[in-house]
Amino acid sequence: MSYITYTDDEMEIVKSGIEAIRNVLMGTDMGKKESLLFCLDRFLDPWFGYQLPYQDAIVDLLQVVIVSDNTLSVKEAALQLICDYAWPPFPVLEEHFERVEAELRPDVSYAMHMDKEIETDS
Image 1 (cartoon, rainbow, N blue to C red):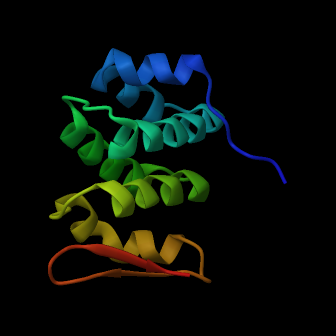
Image 2 (image 1 turned 180 degrees about the vertical axis):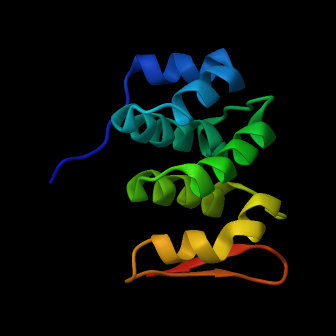
């Protein structure tokens, strides 16, 4: 089994700001997107002590990635970050969630609830 890893390069992208993150996540390099999403997991987790001033903008961007990217692994990784670290509401996901849900893995149930919180059941 192979594991997605990230390097100092991804860490520098996150530290550079939201535009640097946007350029990667809206780009075409799928491997780079996945490694950046893995790196963002560390920066969004309060246990590591990072306080990104643009965290809300990252969550907004993750929503756009989920509805616009054509790679299931990227969508799932971005959705998992939102499930783990974001607060509702999720207006972009709410608007497109039926399509997103249909495109994700059939063996996982994704539900958008009235309070706009996303839950996953495996």
